[in-house]
Image (cartoon, rainbow, N blue to C red):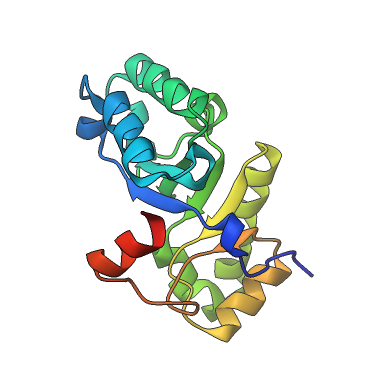
Length: 174
């Protein structure tokens, strides 16, 4: 049985999707510092999500920027894993904390044994690389149970809550 549990309030992480273009902006690190200061959010409760395609464009600059983010104490997640330009050699070099399995794999996970094993393999690869693994788009109890059984660390999805309007989200973090 997996160790998937509901997060305690202290474990809540605010995730922000960041495009390659935004990550490469000269003032990106300053923007993150401003978010931390203005919202009084501890860096350990922040996470940036970037797609694996970042390794294609300006790989060295991207890696340097990601190292700066991690040095601030902010977590880094590889978003939508498996849908883009997946390369195990890139993944092995990437200084991430978390691997996020794309919803498209979760949607079909319980339709066949091979689909379930595919998700289990992604989870295993993440764990081999010392990454926590989160599954996106979890909507049903069946999906939750399967992910527990194959060792997924965390889930994200409507099963535990819907997106919030900006005002409500701001009240949670600021």
